[in-house]
Length: 149
Image (cartoon, rainbow, N blue to C red; front, side):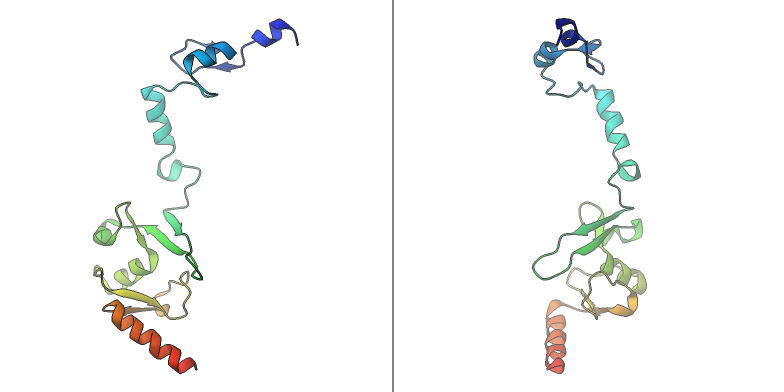
């Protein structure tokens, strides 16, 4: 490789470094393979990566990872009228939101929504039951297990 080729600029710095960068300049500026950021470039990037403009956007739906033998659960962006039930990030479990919308009220923290077919992805209202608390839910599950045997 000729010396001239090695000095040929390969990348342009966005703002602060006034133009083209080469190996030694990269080290001086501590770029570590990236162009430098300004307040404006950071702001633009945040705007491009927020909500529906983010390439990872799934339409306001998140999937909570499965635990043990259970399937993962679906979290959806909470509508403003049901924000009292949402988590800090503004998402709520889809089955709780569907039951709440069906009853047209917010669910209490201790209320439990049960999937009749035990499939957490089947959030049709016909497949959901509401229990006052977890104790009632456990009693129902125990009775259901006895009937299966």
